[in-house]
Image (cartoon, rainbow, N blue to C red; front, top):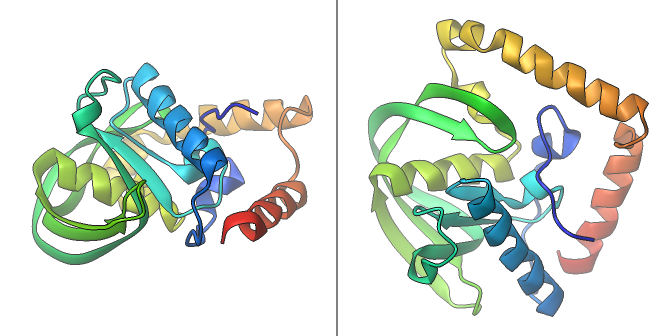
Length: 195
């Protein structure tokens, strides 16, 4: 089944992802689909939760260009080990279409992870790359960028969030999205496969 981006308030977005223990051909195919989907939607980062998967992995391509293969990064089981400074800048999220708000994040970070080849990698990042990695790492813990908003920014997007909630409820009534128990059972099954 091809991957697709789920929207707020889908329960998988709040699911704390489990570390991956193995990477097989099917997972590599999913990761490539995530990269393609992210770029097609003009995104620069995409976490597994956003495509309804319970795994600790995300992809980044700051160019949002599938042809820029040297700009494609895969982070498997990422851990941010150091943070310094703070910076506020506008963020969006593919699971929150058309919502852009200022979010405060660490200015510089050090992150360790495994790449697609299974090699341990470490990056010292700043600027947009650091922001994107922090945003995606939050997803893996079920934390959304709206959770980091101040009261005035939260109020500014209140109606847009309500619209997404209404759309989600309508999709659920039409049977396009399962109930919370069905989603939890499916995520648990998927976790057993690779975690």
